[in-house]
Image (cartoon, rainbow, N blue to C red; front, side, top):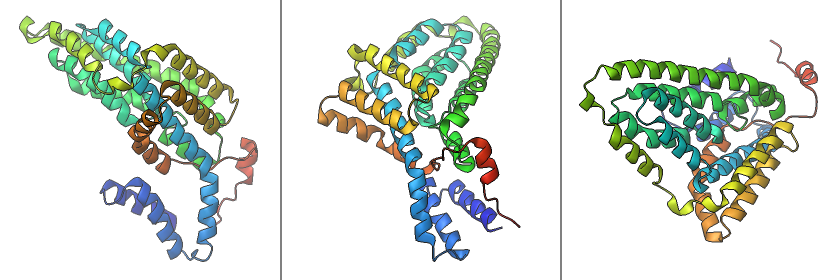
Length: 317
């Protein structure tokens, strides 16, 4: 009962916006542990928890920093421009392009970044075409939901925390289901596009401004952090990201180590100046702290999944 009360209290404080997730995760369990009579050993338990959570916290922080840095340097710019040029004027292409763009940008595991980039790039086009922006929101949310299952996303990290599993145990089996779900998102976007194509065809010709939309999209795509772009290092950043993904799937090193090394290499090559490095760190520190501070999981032991399952000390009534 105490555990259920703690969860309910935590959710109420979060949903009513009385506490942030990070503060609630610290204060609520501490208060309930004292109420349950564990105050004597509370300090040791908290230190042990910090030791177990540290590897995952490091992985989450550096994953957010790395993909945020890749967005800054312009790794996804060619894809964004290609999508914008291909989709203009056709509602079906616009919605499918929205899904592709959202799936790509969601690689950083941060939903806020996905919504900001995708909406900023495509919202003017939806408005000029008189398209239903609710369809855009639906496609972006579905795309973000798929990619949020990445190990540095919140839900997967919490699953690994509860089951005490390593990232390779949870994420690698999810790769094919995630791919199938991404295909479903594209199919839904395709159906939405057919609906919008029929609806817009019934509108007067002057109601849809196709010519103005393309230039506004291309112009809007260039706004923000122009000084941080590194187009000359595009192939280096693309190769580094591809190597990181391969190493992640093959489980060559722990995820925390992979993202730490990749981030250090990307930051050093793209921004040799200490001032530029500090600026990029400050730009993404808020997201990294928010995700890393509220989505960590304990580091898993080398035991197999079967051993973990049978050796878990389940509480007795």
